[in-house]
Length: 242
Image 1 (cartoon, rainbow, N blue to C red):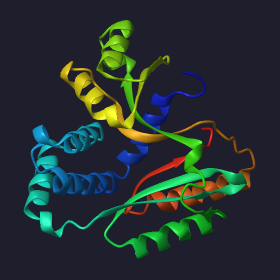
Image 2 (image 1 turned 90 degrees about the horizontal axis):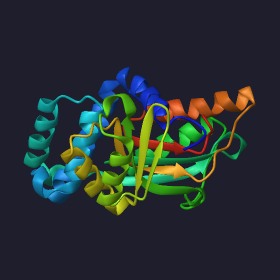
Image 3 (image 1 turned 180 degrees about the vertical axis):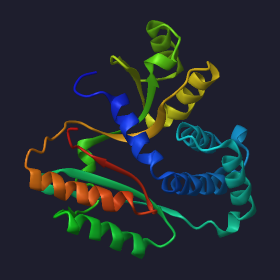
């Protein structure tokens, strides 16, 4: 692994999330609701729900909050009408941006996302205009200090479970999977008691673009801050070099 530390980025995101746990818990609560509606309330028979629960725990969501969310979703299955929507576009200097949202009102969400792009001097494009620059992968980050397993043994455990790639940094290990194999690989690591700092299906840029102009950086940050403040937005991906 080269460039910048994935774990440092995860820690940075967590620090930001910790300042707005209500937003994070809202996001995960919606994911729980959709997962329960699609596969039922029993994690043993619903791999998607197991993955969302793992994400919730990685974001320090209390167990009782998770349980309440599952029970609430199970009791309101007919009333869960959230839809996944994706928007693609460009920020300053052609920075690629992908926005994933979960919404019960697509008109509202599109208007808010378009406003975020416009206020940051960006533009929304058509579907596929930037997603070809990213690879969709399952990504698991493990804090080296929290993992007692020998790196070679960890690598073999991950690869035997179906992972595509394993790489090391000073402070972390990164495991990449095909999206279809993510749940089984994550479960195999969990069964081994391996702590995960982050585990999610994400969009990884094939290459990164650096911004050096201060005005461009401010404009991009304005867009990202507006998107971060929107409860409908689940995730934002860019090819910005951190």
